[in-house]
Amino acid sequence: MRRVTLLLTGSLLAAGLGFPLSAPAQTPNAAPTPAPTGRVRAWRATLPGGSFSVAVHAMVSVAMHEYVVDGAARVTEVNIDTTGNSQARFYFLEPITPQTPLAAGQSIINKVQDLATEAAGRTGQDETWKKVVKTYPGSTHAHTVEFRIGSKDDLKKIFDSADQAMRESKEIIFNLQ
Image 1 (cartoon, rainbow, N blue to C red):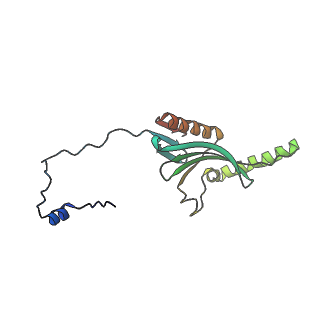
Image 2: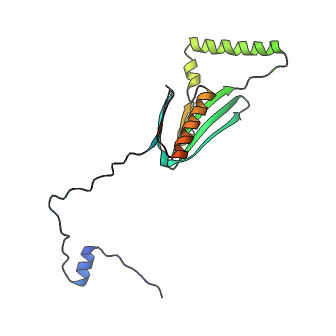
Image 3: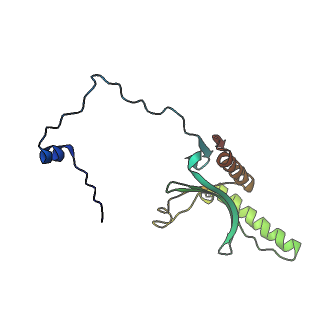
């Protein structure tokens, strides 16, 4: 035998049973229940490309790893996964330079790369190289907040800071500016 439970609203209950339904007692000038006043511990990062803040209790994992993209660039990245629908990605990108067996050949390659970097700086293109590049709509709607970082050392500092905040449930403000 199955048991069925019905939920009836006050008006249906009153109409169905034939007795009047009284309104709940009201207290005049009752003070509203105060909202919680506790602060949320957060890990906050201020970077040249913007800012990122996440509640420490919402941090699920912090990872740092390295990989090669299309044989042309080495990416070292830090990912912060959260219970929300966004993931933070901080990365350092460096081109893979061809290594020659001759020292003179390698020094020529290095010199050409240095000249290209210097020329980009003079024409204002160096700032473009430092920016995160996304394609629309794929990467712009992937729920990933991305920051390009200038060095592996700074990337390691970001990882250490976020990891400490998560492990110790501690508010940390990180600043690279």
